[in-house]
Image 1 (cartoon, rainbow, N blue to C red):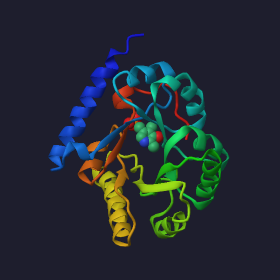
Image 2 (tube, helix red, strand yellow; image 1 turned 60 degrees about the vertical axis):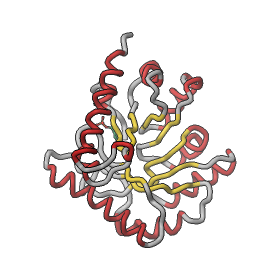
Image 3 (tube, rainbow, N blue to C red; image 1 turned 90 degrees about the vertical axis):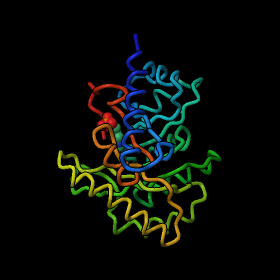
Length: 234
Ligand SMILES: *Cc1c(COP(=O)(O)O)cnc(C)c1O
């Protein structure tokens, strides 16, 4: 297989992200790109790793279970960006470096239990639902202060920031409202004493708006890997 398109796409995405940063008056080093490899097989991820990419976002733990052993020599860090059931905590504790979809205390308890067994820690972002869409996951903004307070007792979980998925719409004002809401929530929680440097928001179709609203992490799938032919669950 010829994967040369990956290098071209990666360069183009980096350029577009850098441009969005400059347009927003920000330094491009402030924004990390998380390549989202869901539905693409291990050979594609290996080719991307050869370009120097070493963190990949996946939304199904089962897919990480399949790919991780095939890529054990690549030094990859797997980032979970999909909804998580507590019965996946064991695999997550073993395989993942970060979870961006922590949204309830039961999940934190399950992860903490398994991480203690593994003797590991995990970076986590709390997923907040900023979109009115039924299909979007995350806890409601009103529930955030209580969850952050409850998370303080888990030293296996390093809470680094917040994550959201904007409303799926061509209405840029609505998309931007979602991102702004996440930033304002973060600012309020920082004022309350929490350390939350990271805001994971923005995907292939809306990362420029997210960067304008303060994103530190953008999650980019199709703009790097191409259109997904297999439906991504979750
Ligand atoms: C699939 C996915 C992405 C990447 O989406 P693209 O539109 O392909 O860039 C980002 N975030 C989450 C949570 C996803 O599930």
